[in-house]
Image (tube, rainbow, N blue to C red):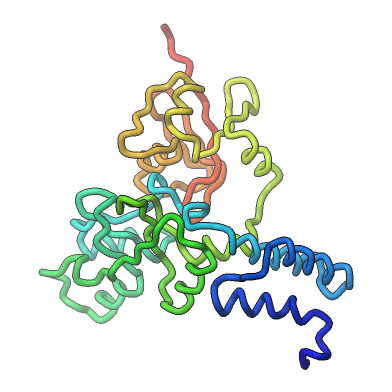
Length: 283
């Protein structure tokens, strides 16, 4: 279709501008007006409108807005052998893992499952080799990296995971191409998600609470009169992930100090909702 026959050339021009340059010079209010105009002309269905709004929102978001926080990151220690790393990959849903040295700020590389498997499929001798021989250089991005530009870099570099760092170079979290794309297509949420987002601590019934895993440990301690340390992680979800040594699955539970934690919802990368039951101890 030629531009002269296109009823909405500015609309299509903005879309091309955004995806070719990674940013749009068109003011947001004009873009929203274009969205409404096209929808009223019945040339854009509601689902498509939501996708376009998702693209628009992406243009205003940063890596820190959607990253997996450091307290909920899964990783493999560099001292772990190749065979042990394969076992971890075989028993967990991730295909890529940061490999750390002395601590989580010491990211030495990224381990890809497809880089490990050939060592076993081809019968290579793994003696005398370690993870440093097969990991890839980590990609680091600042917290304020725009998601539209990051998506462009993911696409052109064919790299699908980046380490997010703060202004001092310390690790803030990690972000994947899936995290970015979810901002466009949205998440599949159940009827409880809106409540969890609005109330980070919600009493469901007497003595049982639904808690947002991103609740800072300091606030959790204040609400529940607890004494969890925030020396290694910042959130209560990080405490739970550390207790399991991995991202737990739905319905898994653990007891820490005087609290029972039950995982209500999770995905491949993070815990999304917790049930907390304070344990009553005899005085």
